[in-house]
Length: 181
Image (cartoon, rainbow, N blue to C red; front, side, top):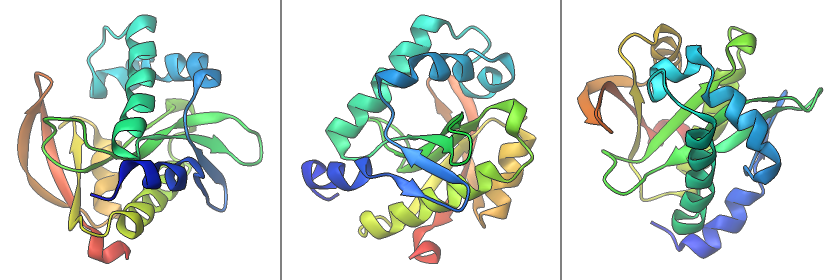
């Protein structure tokens, strides 16, 4: 892994795609982050149906802290034309995680428009370029989350197996980062 301090500045610059800006999350996103993470449609696949506003706050703080410790984390997905918060995407690897992950979560009201694909592709490309020692990235997906399983397939990821993460069972898919360099 590169030096987290030097990588952090690169990560904080974020990414711009045709329709999206991937930006470092911060306190200004607290309410939008909460709305996403307490939405039952999102929550059931990430943390279970009981995520509270306090849990969401801790999740946002976790992402910000992860960036400080690793030099990278999830970005907030923002629509370039409207400025609306759409979700989150990005690389992360918390201590004890089964591998370097590119994860995502998108507001259900904007699903089906290609935003998650666009954001995940940008995150994979960034990760491949800026973490050159990493051979692959995983995607831990709830087995009933058809949209995310479909996205993993569109990204060219391959099923790897299953893992228990934070007490929940997930399918683990893997993307070869050499495909994104």
